[in-house]
Length: 90
Image (cartoon, rainbow, N blue to C red; front, top):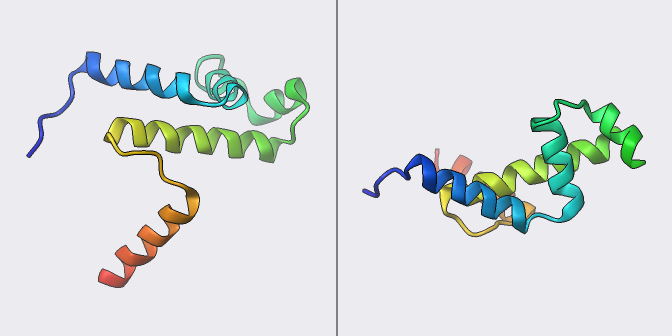
């Protein structure tokens, strides 16, 4: 069983994950989490649709989840295959 990461390690992982994100994805994540902007507000400022903003945000959350888990980045199709395999095991 592995030890839980310290708060400093978590922050370090999050910072590294943010730095690895594409610029637009990082900006959208920070606008939502730090500036408390809505998808619509970000869409208006960036020229993207609200759906595109939502997709960028979802991708950033998945990337940060992988960074915190210590897992390598996983593509969307690999995540789907993993979920299908988990459901079949039930």
